[in-house]
Length: 120
Image (cartoon, rainbow, N blue to C red; front, side, top):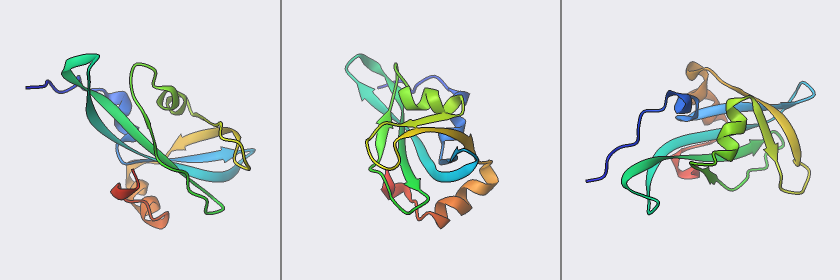
């Protein structure tokens, strides 16, 4: 039987989380996230944490969901320090400030943005 991953409180904001993306003081979009686990051949006896993210831009554009996982934690690491970089070319390219919404606001914003578990 696979062991569960060690608890990681630093991932709590990512559990059905919503971060507001701003640039120059203007809201540009939101990052929605969810946390799960996965099995990897590099750690065959223990599951690992796995974060899925999707971006909904203020103009209505939606990005395809993408994943982040250890050991790199590229996007998760950025979001933990309040930053977010969108590297796909286009009108959203660039750096953003990211601020996690408090838990009592997350469900409301997810509903407003029409984000459900099917989006990951």
